[in-house]
Length: 121
Picture 1 (cartoon, helix red, strand yellow):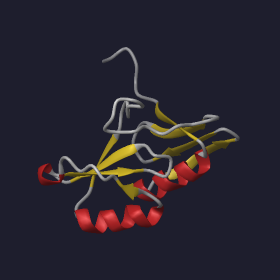
Picture 2 (cartoon, helix red, strand yellow):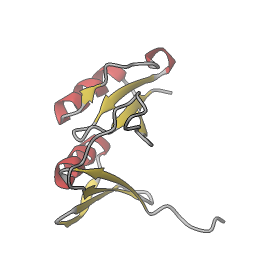
Picture 3 (tube, one colour):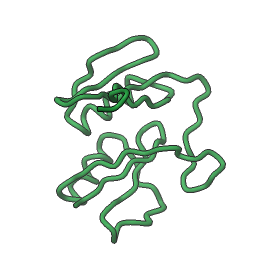
């Protein structure tokens, strides 16, 4: 057993509720905690995604290093095209840089500009 267990992954953003609603719809998770500057979403397993308001938030500029992504989420889907339509309808945008579509992933930006990938096995 490790020293600790994963509790949360926290994303900085300008609007925590908007981003929580986006990931809640994307993952089928529920919004489980709301404060002025903090919103959490959880699924059936351990861990949660949290979103905290940051004044003057500036999104990553992947793939450049000026404001690197620092981390991103890889999310498994069954059908690229159907999943792409769904995330775009939720407010995501498809990143112009797509280095891995032939390798099983597509890169998107959430409404706050964080990169995430839709992946197929």
